[in-house]
Image (cartoon, rainbow, N blue to C red):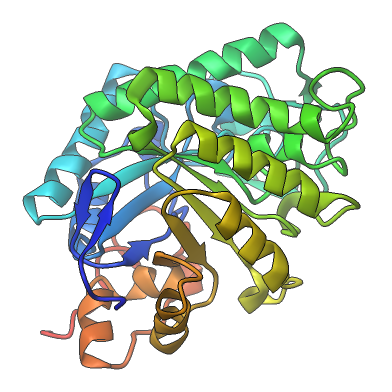
Length: 357
């Protein structure tokens, strides 16, 4: 079943294998380039590619060398990527990721500011080229004007994504970035309509989703969620299950392209309970993507059991540009080289061997 074609709303996918979003830090000056086009084209046999996190605004460029999608140069750079993937028969959506408080001011362009739902600093450090790891910058608590501007930035980025040739967008509401910062009461300490209760914490995600749908259509907007995730000082909390079921039920009513749920337990974090995965699957009337530490056997199991329609593979796609063919042949997988995950240049990026090599 995993390697059979699948109709993702209006998108005809060659198989049910998804390339998960993977930050690779090759966008010099935050602009996609020909090296990135080569990288994604190498992996175009995936049924669907979800790009690395891409900021919809200058304020969201918290990491070094991540791409944006808010100006003409970035649209032109992404067009190189989408043209290369489509030329090989692939489908590709861009993940819109605003880093929020997971940021350092030195990674932002002039005039941009680090923002979040509340003023608390994210624990840990952020890499800054030429300076090494530095403590995260203290965020400015977002005003209602900041929130409205951010919603508009997501809508504008969605329009630019279609202009750049993407088949759709994925809203990144996982891994402790801005949208999940609003979802999670361990981070969101607001007492207003964007944080006083579960409905308030869901509000920004729903406003962004509605704005993106209004901009490009529901069949071009997916979303990624990570309930129980602990990345970037998120984590489980009382009422998390009910909050996420309510959120996904409202997203279902919009008719989104898909819901994509991530479980990071394969990397040592607490597992996402099977019960909430099943509840979210039931709450969403549409395509469901599962992600997190899958191999062929486990991917076949969840698709065969109807627990997911598609399965996303992350790190295996870093080291195996022909992962789909390796799955088809039950061939061994190349091992990734973590030292080059986030370094500039082709090494550890476009030089992993294919089976044919």
